[in-house]
Amino acid sequence: MVSHTMLAITSLTVFLCLFLCTHQLRLTSNPLQRGSSRPMELNCQGESRDATDVGVFWFRQKKGATYPESILFLSITKKPIYRDPSDSNRFKASMSGSSFTLVIERFNEKDQGTYYCLINKNSVLTFSPGLQLLYPEATPPALITSR
Image (tube, rainbow, N blue to C red):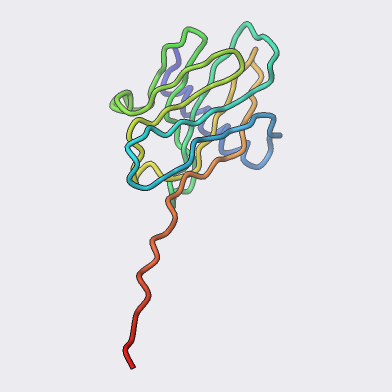
């Protein structure tokens, strides 16, 4: 079982990988729309080679935050371990082959940020590039003046 210490160490590793690691993963999502009730789905695609020991860490660097924080870890047993147990109501993770999915049930303002996945395959860590999920800034209506 992964402890909170392991999640903290992995968080530090992710922060360092932002600057040092090569990116061999592709991270994609469905379009982000303000006010949509549709779940937000992120897909992390790795290499197609089989692995005997696979796990995925999901991280988010919230808008305006200094460093990423862990969301959850999903091991080959497919039982997620959440940094915050209350997140289990909103975040769902799954894996199929070399594809890893994170679903955010009700994406809202506080979920905005840059998302990352980190795959642990046979004790080799592979870090994804960041994927920004930010709502477009609202533009105020144009001021109309009469002549």
